[in-house]
Image 1 (tube, rainbow, N blue to C red):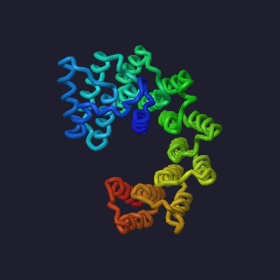
Image 2 (cartoon, rainbow, N blue to C red):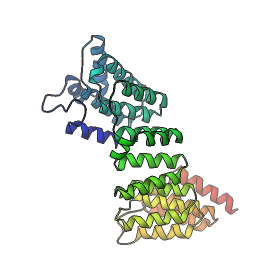
Image 3 (cartoon, helix red, strand yellow):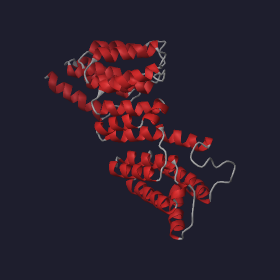
Image 4 (spheres, rainbow, N blue to C red):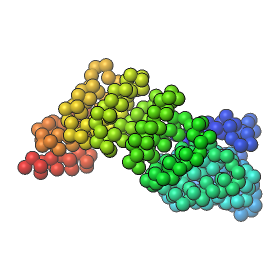
Amino acid sequence: QHQQQQQQQHQQGQYSGGGRGNSPISPLEDLMRRKGVDEAWDALEEMQRAGLPTDRFTMSRMLMRTLADARRYWDPSKIQRSVALVERFLQQQPEEADEVLFNALLDTHCRMKDVAGLESTFKTMQELSIEPSHVTLGILVKAYGQACDIKSVLRLWEEMEEQREQANAVTYGCMINACVRCGQTEKAVEIFDEMKALKKHCNTILYTTLIKGYGNEKDLPSALALFREMREENVPYNTIAYNSIIDVCIKCSDVQSAEEIFREMLAPNSTVQPDLITYSTLLKGYCQIGNLDKALQVAETIKACGLKCDELVYNTLMDGCVKAN
């Protein structure tokens, strides 16, 4: 989501120094398109050795492409190398630095769970007087949330008031998720209520995140109320939303409510179908209450639906057998 926002900023020319306009793509971008981003990083390294300049737009595109490739195959050494080359670019051409490039760099550190690198990059951003945006704020709170550093999450949210006022659903989602991860569901609800006042709350991911938060607190009534509120607010349900509320029901040992919600998914007018997670969560619930017959029925249903039972399903079933005996 952060990468999509950054790409939109580039395409619309909404970054420091203006957009590329109709000028031709750089040789590095052309190389990246023809032979891949690894070849482009090799060429950049040679250019830097020779003292040849490039531009911030190309750097951002290459870094974002590297992160996109990492979704298919995670190679920390490649990502670390790309970060080092971008940092060298900033040292050699500080006048080319802009907010979008720094956001791409911060997002990379966030994906690497490298808080020290994140803090160093943000410090450099401040030293170069690059104004952060709401995208920057979202990346920072997400990174500190992953590290369960709630003090830094709350400090940044308080300090970056201007960016907070610009925040969209993605930025708010990062903040709410960070609070939930850190066990601060009450604060997450407070921020969600702020979004409601601003009419920015109609987002499936935000509701699902809060439902999970209530699940961590084992507060089933609040989770169910929030789930029902989605329909009232015309927020679309998806499989993740259903799976989240079913999981809360199971955590709270309310298998009956889980079954009722599951039946909603199977209703003729439902646009959401259960997946392996839905079935395995129900199966876990039946095993927890010692109803092995229903657990085995769910396992058979999984196979009948053409889904493949995974290790979790078999482990849960075996655990249920042991408890039943």
